Amino acid sequence: MRVRGRNGGFTLIELLTVVAILGVLAAIAIPQFVLYRQHAFDGLAQGDLRNAVTAEEAYFSANGTYVSCTSASDCQSKLHGYTKSDSGVQLAIDATTTTYVGTARHVQGAGGVWKFDSEGGRFIYEE
Image (cartoon, rainbow, N blue to C red; front, side, top):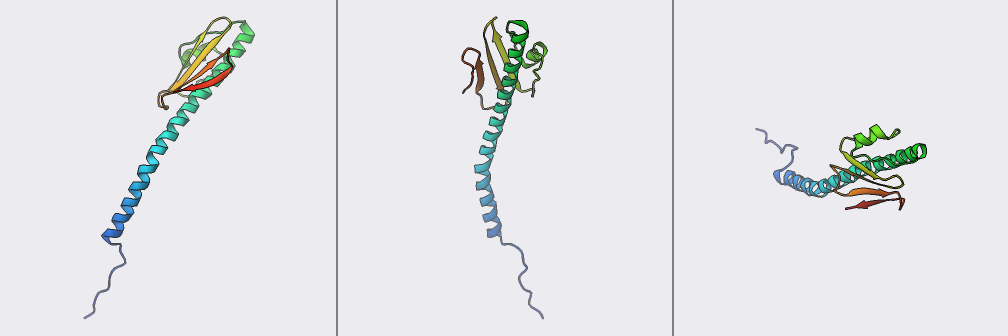
């Protein structure tokens, strides 16, 4: 009779060790991935606000006044040259004849709001 040798498989301890290591890596990586994803959505909102600001300035150059809009779709219909990038972007512009304040946020973003004030001339992210 022949004695059988050990097959080339993995032991239960080796498999459990690999699963534990993968669990630790996933516990570290998944929250970071969610954070990166939220920042990407915030970047979409900032990009939409930048495009709306450019279109708002073009509108002012042509008409001598700024225009208000309450949503990205409203801005798209009133401001030629502005196209919303994503349905999750919430954009609004509150304007007078000589100044305006634009705000934008993404519903899947980190919760902050991008703001642009035409008097200050800079973009600010408020959490």
